[in-house]
Amino acid sequence: MTDDPGYTPIACGVHDRLESWAVRRETVEVVWRDGPGERRRTTRIADVVARDGADWIVLETGETLRADRLTSVGGVAVTPSC
View 1 (cartoon, helix red, strand yellow):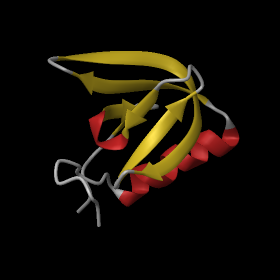
View 2: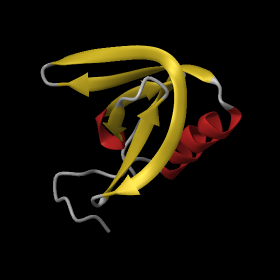
View 3: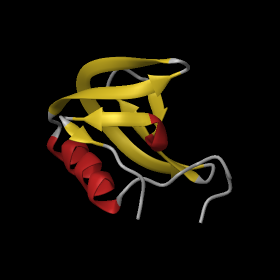
View 4: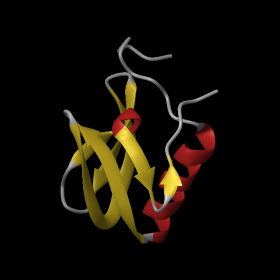
């Protein structure tokens, strides 16, 4: 359950992959929606956290992204929870 009615949880399998990449400190390409366009970084995922009723990923660059804004990570499409 989330506190933010605008948040859409991501698929559990994708969430598990995010955590795995973070633990293994793998470098991945992260693509996310940012306003009308997309942004991308090739970096490591420093952490995956739950905060403010949503899941977030913290990149090694220091950027924090809400999980439902992700388009793909490591070539894996980020899909909504079923």
